[in-house]
Amino acid sequence: MWGNDGSWVGSDAQTIARAVTNREVSASQVLDDHLAHIKARNPELNALVTVAEDQAIRAADDLDTRIGRGEDVGPLAGVPFTVKDLIATAGVRTTAGSRALEHNVPSVDAPAVAAMRAAGAILVGKTNTPEFGASGLTHNDLFGYTVNPLRPGGVPRSPGGSSGGEAAAVASGMSVVGLGTDFGGSVRWPAHCTGLRSVRPTIGRVDPDGQYPGVPSGDHLLTNPATMHGTLQTIGPMARTLDDAALVLRVLSSRQYRWTDPGSVDLARLDITWAPGDGTVPVGVEIVAAVAGAARRLGARPYEGGALAEGNDLFGTLRSVETHTDIEELGTDFGANIATMLSDVRDVDRQVVERLWAQRSDLVHRLLGEMGDVLVLPVASIPAPPLGEELFDVGGQSLTWAQALASCRAISVTGLPSVVVPVGNTKSGLPIGVQFVARPWCEHVALAVAARL
Image 1 (cartoon, one colour):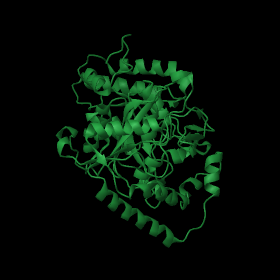
Image 2 (cartoon, helix red, strand yellow):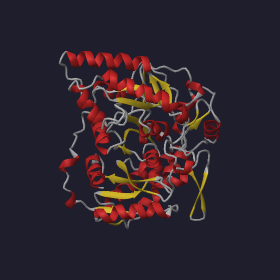
Image 3 (cartoon, one colour):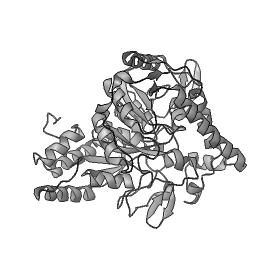
Image 4 (cartoon, one colour):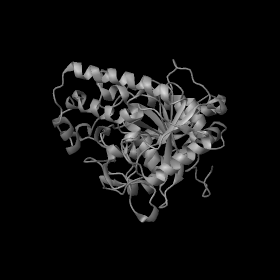
């Protein structure tokens, strides 16, 4: 929707792309509006750590020229987008929030970024992340804290993490859509904290290459399949509307995998289950009520299996046996969080690690047998936390951010797709997101169920 002040800030991706394609507005004008908005909002929010203004201006000018020649420029024509600073962008600094990569400028885009550009989207900048994405709260020694654009009661809050900068950029209108990454909840938790829509795709749906840390291969950065990070972390879209999130996912989706339109799903035939949490940590009363309300509207039955409660612990155990070699090979100039993580590395018998991955395979098999077509559950135990806080009281129990994300981590370890949409607010005005978990390659089913709400 075109803003009341004549600006295109706040418009959705499909409206912008249609208007740019039909020459109702130039890509350059849309970009100018968003660059002006970045200059106005980013000093307060610290969401973008690198603004790619010159490159974006050239890309918009080129797009307008191609449209003038009658070329088909793609479904995201002229749509400004941002990218989490863990993902490689050609000619634009990519730091992963680390001093070790402070001056790193890749020469090749991650495949996901290349797909966005090929679809006509305009990269406007890179967004803040905790160092190497290894935290659920977005701050680092290089760029500092990112602030949630939502501030009910005037209390500064975190946008979550590790895609917190991306969430703040999209939620505040500095970009229209964005690319985040999700390991233990990193596109789902920030969407919950800022009232956005996001998708953690099935492992493999989106080409994972181009994420830091990774394996250098010439000018490219490849995913390391021998690591938990390389196996389970995905790139996923964040947007203000579910239709935009679905559109970006379709653009990102690898060609070898068939895309199914969410509109083709017969909701009446679905077996939907729901759970008030993963079963290992308490969840805030208001959040449980929001999940229960969503489940009731969908006619969901209670989840009664045992596999879900094992996922969070298995995620943590697998993480504890990681060696983090890909990070160590980047140097030694790391912040306290990464330094501690590296110092905690211990020698583990290879057979122990292999047994854990076998346990993971069994867990996935059992969860698929218990969850039906879609599982509805919380994103986190808490809403967006006050900026700088690290421990959170839930039902008299003190939780770390990692414990508060147990419901996300339980799904991450399975590699199943999950869609997050806001379904309500706390009494204090903070958004509450719910995740809809589907079977492998069935993002369209989760999107269809989420759209019903």
